[in-house]
Image (cartoon, rainbow, N blue to C red):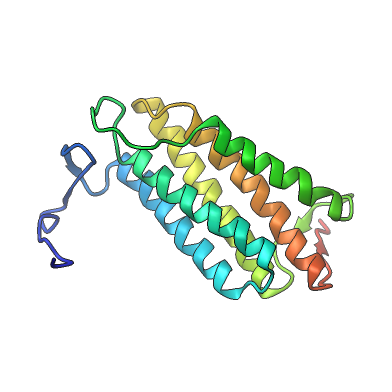
Length: 179
């Protein structure tokens, strides 16, 4: 099978279900940003050395692939796919609930950074927030279901906690924001 099809050469692409849309359509921008986030998580994993964090990041990558397919499949399509669910967001909450007590309480805002892996996880968090904004925008124009926005919102929280945990494990101090 060839990797190139040439079907997108005129600036259109297909959603799951066959509908052709412009490559700069909001739906494409939303799931493209989820794909970008998945790639950034892949970079985080390549830098990470902690098995437990890698396990969480690996699950997130699988979730993001599911979310991308969810967003690439309009609700009106008859095609049956796995969609992101409330259970996926609850799993992220459980990770946060386990990791947060391991961290020093926040008394100030902190700047993104620290060690390389933590800084990259913070970068993933910002890409996640952008994906969330795009999905919120998309949801105002066409149905996407309630769970994609909730999942991305929870994921950005988890990425913040993971970045802090990576810094803590590496004995890397956090930088306090000093306005």
